[in-house]
Length: 232
Image 1 (cartoon, rainbow, N blue to C red):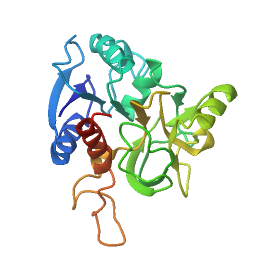
Image 2: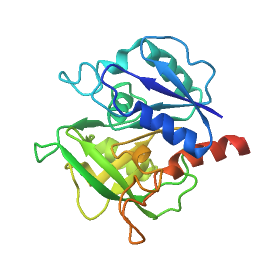
Image 3: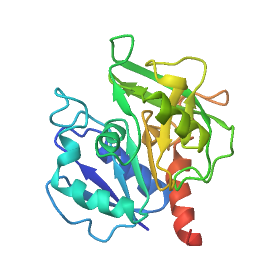
Image 4: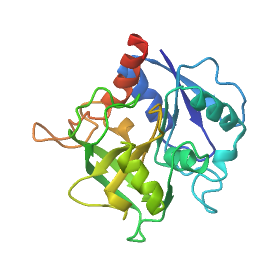
């Protein structure tokens, strides 16, 4: 399986995403935001970072990059797309997922290992989890507060499009403790925490077993690979 990772000016976790894909057993393909070519990839990752134009509104300018025309078209045809942090903001700005992201209610940048509950396993990126499973994924953002209208929020909750929810503490003031959502089809997922930073022992979050041993993020990438193998 070939999974494309789009680099935007200001992306800083694109190499981490590529490494996570490689560790999971797929081939990472580097893509550039200014191109109109997805190079025949089977899935896409929009990585975290601080893309150009974020000072206007996070992800707003990046969502208009040339390659996003191809990303939107591919997503609408069913290609799996994962937006991480800044990538989540781009998905929201491109209307590939509902809702939006605003500045953390604390007014400060947050960096922590964050516990999450898996609310949906029916997406392309979460099939390897169990519903209700509790995982720990690193979080780092300044504009991670998820917002939506009351009507949209009720629909997301009612139709099972809330994919992850914060546990223990809501780090950014997200409505309903929402950490990640999907589109109705389940092929597009956006979340604020960074699964690519929890894929390799020695570099992930602490666990009761050992320091830096958490690899819960690996399941994101393994899930989409498994889905492609079974032809879902």
